[in-house]
Image (cartoon, rainbow, N blue to C red; front, side, top):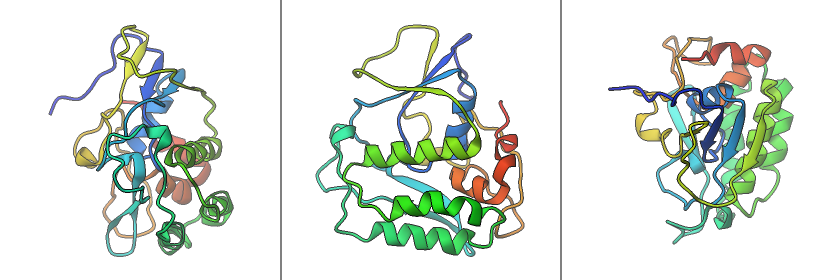
Length: 214
C-alpha cells in the first residue's frame, strides 16, 4: 500500500483531536512546526476520536469513551460524553491493571488519574486536556491552535491529515510513524502504534526517541 507523504515543505499540520492518541498521531505532531486542531468537523463513529488501544496481559484492548446517542454527524465541540456509564472507573482500572508495574507508571499516573476523577461534559474538552498532558510529559513544545471554521486547505504550507489516522489501519499502514520496538509491559512480540500512554509508562523520558521521523 502506498504511504501517505506530506506535500513539499509543509510547516503546519491540520488534524482532528484523538483520545489518548496513537504513536502515528504523535509522530505526526513532531514533524511540523505548528499544529492546527480541527474544531468544526462532525463526529465520526468508529474512529480514534473516542477510543484508544492499550496492551493488557492477554490482548490489545480498546478503551472507548461513550458518547450520547444520536450524535453521528454532530458538531464535534458539542458532542457530549455519556456519563451515565462508569467509563472513567473502567478506563482507569484498565490502565492500572495494564501499567501499574511499568517503570514510569508511578511518575505519570497522577497526571492521568485526576482526569478520570472528573466528569467531563464534552469529548472535545477531554481530548484537548489529555493531549496537553501528553505533550507536557513528552517534553514537546508546539504552537497548537484551533480552526476557525471547517474548510479545505489550499496552501502548500498546511498538510491536511484529517481522518487519515484511523483504527482500520492501526497496525498495517501508517501516515507518519515508523515502528521502533521498545520494551513493553506484556508479551515478547512488540505491538506497534498503541496509545501514547503505553510508550510513556514504559519508556518515560526516552519516549520521543521511539517516535522516529519517516
